[in-house]
Length: 418
Image (cartoon, rainbow, N blue to C red; front, side):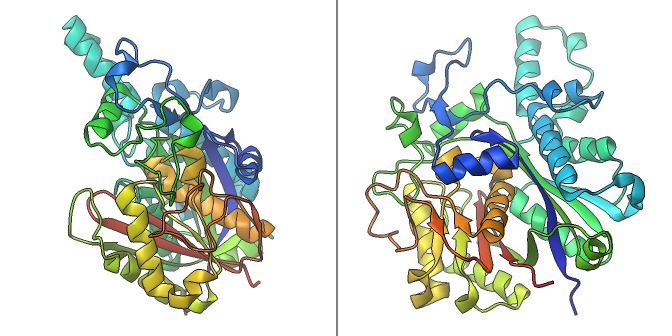
């Protein structure tokens, strides 16, 4: 029998709020966190096709952290630290009472330390002074810098891993945390996702790829519009999500609050294309089926899907095709929501933030709206996609997350039956 794994703490840093309470209130109100990018000094914004993003403005890590090394790490790792601090406090997990070697850290990150990396390479070529490169550059820009600093900050000495599979990174981090606890390697895992890539180079790269929305530069809040007929690309976002996963027996022993059970997970590769998913949705459908099989839950029992739904013309359509293949007539009864409509696409953090939204829906019986769903695309239209908040009892939720490189992940959460 598989070890049961539950979520006991949540933490989030997002464009619509820092802290789960603020995030969830804004999400339920359908508030957009997408705004105009003021400057990529010295680059004129007119040179960019897209000029909007889901930004966390006026972020000062010192307001949230007293960790002495916080100034030495990149912005994405600072986000991860803040989210993890909240999640640990929310779970009431006392590290001084835990066996540190039984507490793991698994973080998903798509891009890593791009803020510091771009700054340092620019200064190097401008100043031609190699000896002036920041001494902490290398450990700060490596993808595992967030998982390393989280372990240092909170004394977690168990398995420490970084998953980097582009946009599906933190969904895989959750899945690997589940497997880590199931296999007996840890009792508890801090599972997180973080990215901070609203930088001149990364943004230019996505613009050149023609992946970003460019029609709504004058109306930023309208730019991220999953499943809508007028969508024209995704909106880049930034942020972090953290979840405390632990074995059910461990949670019961310390009488922890439980938000949801992590019931199943699957990860697959389409082995198809670096950017575009297979247009028939077959591989997405297979990923969902495998996750449900791992959970031991039939499609007929699923109530809600937190969709990947990036707002790209091809991606949204393919995801709905996959959902229809798995759920058939049940697809007409599912509640489906797109968190990215509110905050943009946070890359490596997307799966974790989506899972937090799903856990909150299980906990509260409330589902946040999908905003900007003004003219439903006939290819994507399903009754459960709503511009309004929904009141619905959610027993089983599915979190979809798909990444560049033909990488798919699905995580199944269910209401805890303790």
